[in-house]
Amino acid sequence: KGIEIDHSMNTKYEGNWHQGRKQGIGKMIFLSTNDQYDGEWKEDIMEGKGQFTFHDGSIFIGFFNDGLKTEGIFRFKNGNEYSGGFKDERRHGQG
Picture 1 (cartoon, rainbow, N blue to C red):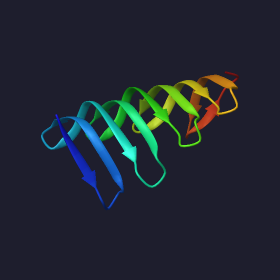
Picture 2: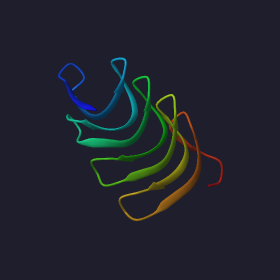
Picture 3: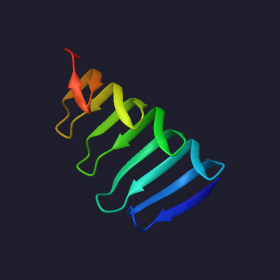
């Protein structure tokens, strides 16, 4: 477990590591936007179950593959919700 502040990427990561890479459970704050990801990591990439909280208050709770949202619930800041699949970071399907 440890903390890394990456000034070139403007991020702060706190969580588990394996062989110098983010691995397991961790939290990353994107300092320039104040967006935050809490969840699973695999070889420095958001992978598995996690929650991404956006600076405007919107939240995505679900699954990530290769750093991208794949399936879950997106709660918009106005309270509306989409539940379903995602493709290329966009809602995919009827939800």
